[in-house]
Image 1 (cartoon, rainbow, N blue to C red):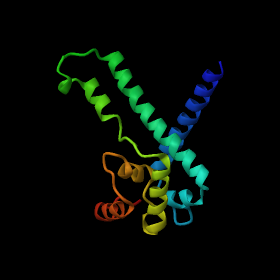
Image 2: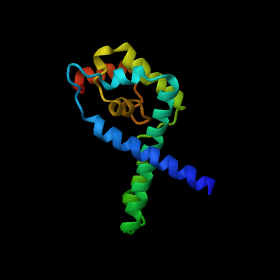
Image 3: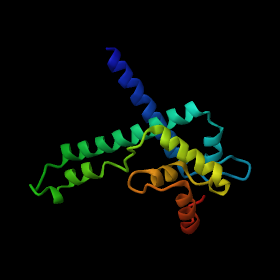
Image 4: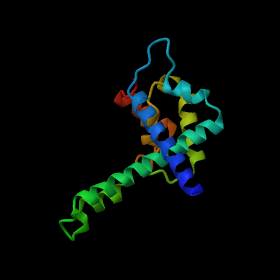
Length: 152
């Protein structure tokens, strides 16, 4: 019973966080509004850690549930795992965050502190660049966003 309540509370937190991120990710701030980077820097370290932990857990679980849902709808058509969409889905497993949460908190903070012009870069884009698949440093991200114009 207690475990069920904890799981339910965690799911509520993750869903709420997801909705907030979806609503806020594509919003370009007006001149008098703060940016996502400014908002991140105003958070205390515990809040940053909790936010990032919830974000990465929600991303991972959402991805896994998406793969599971696909599997329940679409039955395998091949025994060749290289061409099996479900196997490919599981292998992709989202972007992956294998480092401790504190590592990513420090990297996001360093990025927004070191490059004030990049504070308009959405948090989601920063996390993508820190993920295992891209694995960029704050300096590499700054250069990438500068070259590709991903500031809002």
